[in-house]
Length: 565
Image (cartoon, rainbow, N blue to C red):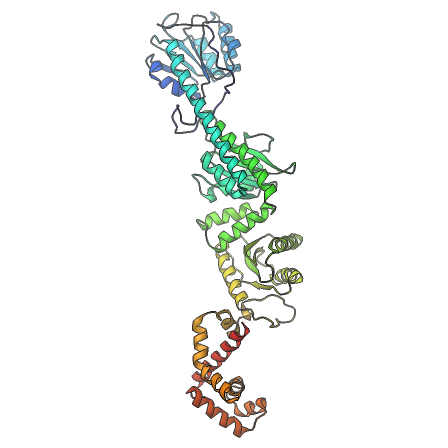
């Protein structure tokens, strides 16, 4: 038999509207007890509950249980209550029933449960229509239920959930406090936010460029595809709130009192995760987002480098080291940073040497130059003393003037630096090849050797035999080859005070022409013949052999570059 009572108030200080996390249980799961959860409890299931209206809203959270036999129970409610009644107090007239339901809906009661044992054996049509018009869940019980037992069971679950929620919130605060105390950077903060919430989180600046993306349950491509357009359709706000067509939870991030970006927490794919009006995010998610924004503000004060620069560095390093999970992920990430990923020609520019300690300053100068030129590009430090630039040019656009301007910016600040350029590529996925080629060009750049007039950067066409051997000078195989072929001659010159190595150089440079060799060495032809015979004897070679002359010329070139250091 039902036991009715007056208003059963919830405890003070407990909030309403905790979001349901899909797939979790009702108790100790990180989400609120819902109407569906309550109806599944044995104490209510024994009454054979039937959902008459509001079937799509059974995910609504239950904040408390309210037993009532009053004609105006709404005046005692605060929202989120599961209202239990025998139906005895319901008005007789249709207008009165409509007013009764409207008042419950206006205070956001979770559901109305009516027992069909005493007054009614079927719900009044007026009640059904009134609940349907307000999308209020109406549940009937065909059998007698002990309402007081229902309150005891449900309230125990709710209070247990609230205690668990307090513990979870405390752990969130402790985790972010620890991050702040150890001076964590933005990547660490965003990674922690994604791990604690189990959600995808994205940090963007004011022009809707995604600087950091920590996906959860999605790929980078899925998260960042069409990012700018999607982000612009999600309006800003001053407080953490669910906004936009996809139901993002967003909050602003400030720096020195000025808003400079925001953090977005995304619901699970395919978009709005709230089914039947249930919130997609829990209070713990809101707490994580709030603490994330606070931690990012502090990190911005600690880490002076603009985060756009940090994002460019990270993206370029992942590209050159090919750490992206897929080409699609790379395209989505670069597009979210504002770089065209279709219909462009890509070119890698590297600066090496002489810039160590000034990477940040040089990054800034190069970025300003590219902005002045109106060229989309990413600029970032790839390693100490090495800065990379990825240019995205129009297909018909000439790249040499841009490379020259960038090179002059670098050399104006660091005259000893080497600027190298890789080949053009038409796919972003091939950009690492352009960077590798530019790196090889830089390694082969001979110190002190002038470049062609009007050009201050190095390119692949500059790399000849001498440059190649210079790049390979640390390879012991090159060193061993030079020593085996020419070491005996160098030792002979040292012991006897001769200069046969110079004679050999003149002979090889003259392509075996003895007359030219004599003229260049200021020697008689007889002396040249005599010296060449001595060289053949010391080296055990035949100077008339084209193959041996090629080997000796290569060895001599290797010896020259090895002496450069």
